[in-house]
Image (cartoon, rainbow, N blue to C red; front, top):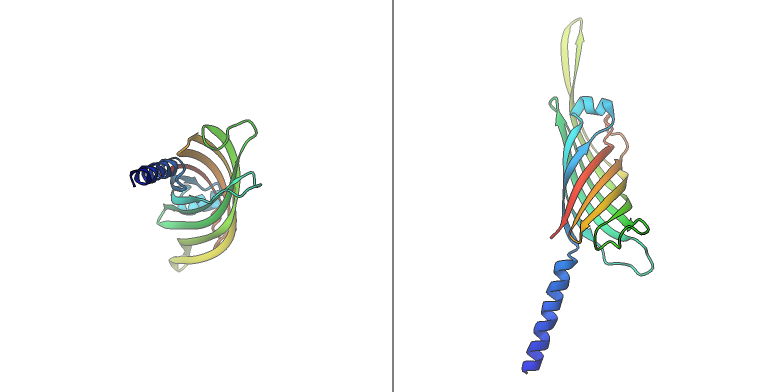
Length: 185
């Protein structure tokens, strides 16, 4: 009976230790910049991103690590807003000779998914009969893509530079460049 308890305890300890080193859940925090000048004039070019990532189990024969990333970005300025929520399937793989994905090393990736873009902005027109201000709001769902370059700082931390591509929504171009820190906890 004691042998069974010791074996069970060692198995539990090994499982907890393995989980601590390979937790698939990550918190993502970062900065987002809108490169489109007309969109930046409407909402401001600087924004923030928060998200969660979940690393999927490895698939034999596939040389990249898949994850599901859910991110939310907000850009606001001049009384106007652009909110973007995304759910993407992202594949990441190390550059040859640049790490094995478990320690320091550079990697690259590509993501595809669904984006929800919500815009709200005012337009002011000055004419002969005075000034007219109208408010435009819309929400669209669309496909999107992401190209990224990352650095595994250690087994639990990554820094990624990404370019997220999305079609225009109500005259606003939500394509963005982001810098995100991800921590697996």
